[in-house]
Image (tube, rainbow over all chains, first blue to last red; front, side, top):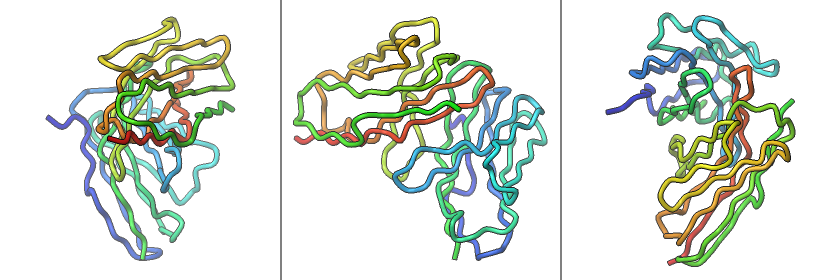
Amino acid sequence: DAMVIQNPRYQVTQFGKPVTLSCSQTLNHNVMYWYQQKSSQAPKLLFHYYDKDFNNEADTPDNFQSRRPNTSFCFLDIRSPGLGDAAMYLCATSRTGYEQYFGPGTRLTVT
Amino acid sequence: KQEVTQIPAALSVPEGENLVLNCSFTDSAIYNLQWFRQDPGKGLTSLLLIQSSQREQTSGRLNASLDKSSGRSTLYIAASQPGDSATYLCAVINNNNDMRFGAGTRLTVKP
């Protein structure tokens, strides 16, 4: 059974057109993370939620926003996607201090 | 800021060989360390988690060690198989819940 689900798996958007990526979990974990991974690079942490507390990385562009309406769901909003935002976006969850579980990722293409 | 380095960046071995992947990190005040496997275009699969108080963890043909004081971890793969071909990522979790990844080692096991 899938534990961390990301939708859609593939997303194509136009330059400047807002897009939302979705992540849900069945693990009841209190921490949720969003990462950006570009080809042949390490995943880069964008932000994470510790319960309802939002923690933004200092170098995450303002173009990226996140929402966590409840424990199970977390959304990544890209307000005005640029060509440089094309990447794989990975969602992960964990209980504090324990291992992280990753979803399959959403591959974003910007045309 | 925590930095994680993995050496080598790529490794090619014949089937059946034992091999070691290396990971180093600059800040030893970590909460735990996790090794992942990533197949091309896919999400991350957790292999092993080592808590900061532990020295090693084993799962099947995999053994991961941690020397926190020197900022090093190794992943040992015994009797490698072509199905082990993937990118292996090391990640450290700091006490503030954020996770930092190395760039990975791309492993190819030749039949």
